Image (cartoon, rainbow, N blue to C red; front, side, top):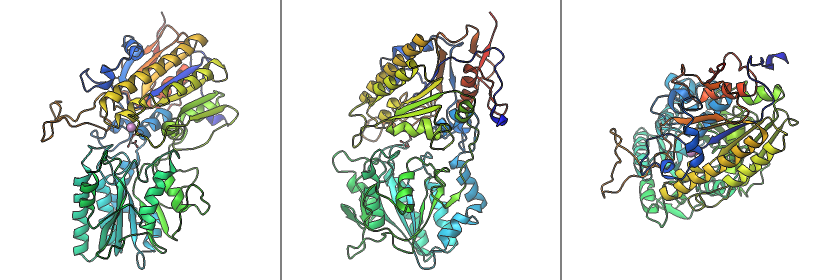
Length: 555
Ligand code: 3PG
Ligand code: CO
């Protein structure tokens, strides 16, 4: 209907091909040896920077600017792509869960009531990422939920812990597990039979995404549901300490284990009549497990035994699929996204990335919605990612293939907007391998080059930005910004994202000479980008969108 109709921009024309390029994990920081972007050969991104301040600037990509609880929260791809696509700032999962726990409303909802029905006879299982990363989950929220569940009648609780080392320092899983164990011990003193039942590293157990590798979810299923894993321990802290000593082990890739009793019997398989809560608030790496737990028809792996459970997610992970059906906290309602507006105004749209980031430029971009708005006007292309490897082994990833497909889409003249995510600086940055991350940044820059050349050929416009920082800082620093050393005098590698701002650059032969970045929005962030590219398509953004970053001066 007419509600979708966008006003014409008073000065900017329609019909230009606009490429929206998102470099994943590409922040801006002072050049130094731990800034993989500054060390890498990145001539294209360097040359764009020369366009400052008219055609290059920095924007905020963390904290309140992307709907996170505090300014100490680093950015991440979910909230970053949500903000980029939606053009507004929504209170995100982390914050919504905080509020629901603080007010106690979480225990009044339909979702909690549903799992509570099992407390009398069954066990409550809590599955999720145990760290204070704040990207997928938060340990303090888990601890509150444990306490609250016990107060609301849970008598037997089992935690299935996934270790992090990706949103937090590698090795920190030991401390998090100790904290968790402490709280579980307190519950035991109060007569609640509460313990850790299984564990494993997030990248090897359970938390795959976008169906890149179902074996990851299967390994989790075996440990959590069936109580089967290659390693048996009596104590979860000891489990982590021991398994970290295996060759190539790290928190992210820790082998799966189950906790057993004195007779060697697993203490917490998931059985008929039990309740399960997946306590991650972020969707992408929980959707696959949610499907395995919830779907009657399921053929991704042999589940062997499918327990009859009452299952709820911390949030509903996919509103379109209504998955899971029950959840403790309602997700942000991200409506009227730029993608939907543009398609409904006839903008033909192409989106592309490789598997590990494909949902970022589709699902997250469109407000956590899968599928097309209008099949006739849209094409989403997923380049299969390598699976079963850590990306420092192949730091080029599929950057070239993504760029080629997008180049072809531009040259085909079939699309008005092409948007893509180039994952390298993020995915390789998360491995903590600095040398490989430097190669990754170069590969990303090569990808940008190919897109810019195609835009040049068709007389189009480009907008290059990033979703959050990562590769620009590979070392943990103290308050003064100096690299932190561990007790052996080695630097502490930073595998996580950062608090840094990200660059945004515009250009291309289709950009009118008078278009430049405004100077009156110094605190602009990712949510200002949608209005900006809507303008570049010749439209005014809806009035409740965050303001555009550009102005048009007559010259
Ligand atoms: C991950 O899921 O890989 C990390 O926790 C966050 O990375 P992303 O936000 O860049 O996807
Ligand atoms: Co990342």
